[in-house]
Image (cartoon, rainbow, N blue to C red):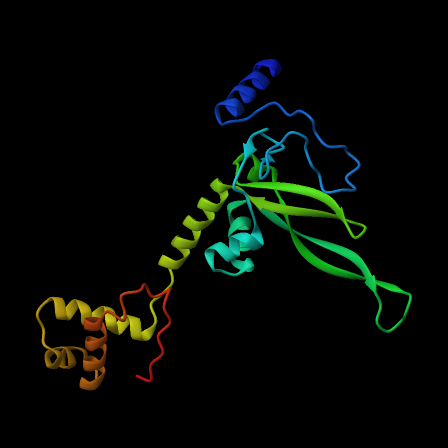
Length: 219
């Protein structure tokens, strides 16, 4: 059995090696205001599990703007990573049909997991907003890199569209020295289709990856 004090010392040493610092000057525990820590530099966040000081963190909204994807995609990837879970919560809102009365509104919100904090991917900031407890999820620089890698893998597994698949075949046949007439005979595609796509390849209009450019065609 591992001695508890030895385990604590090992955890502290590992956190210090990753850049962790002792937690001092922590905010009060009433949680009624957005938590602020004295003598911290602007932009610094403290991982509550490891004690590490993190910079460059982004909210999910800021990360969606940076990566030009939807917030649903970011939330889905963070959930697949085990960094967040989506919990069903309810809050009271004014009733439209009965003035003065309230009714529950249900919504799913992202909540940080301890695993996500241990991995250094996400940091939660909890505070009160309009009379209800709120958790804001911040994604660290390590978490941002992990999300980008997951997005890249997801895009690579996306099947090619019809036009892009034809473009891939025609490019390969052209590189083997086949003429456009030969390609039309081999593939059975109309000569005008082969000619148009071959011209597009030559002009470089299809050089972008298939998931960064959407091509429309009537062929």
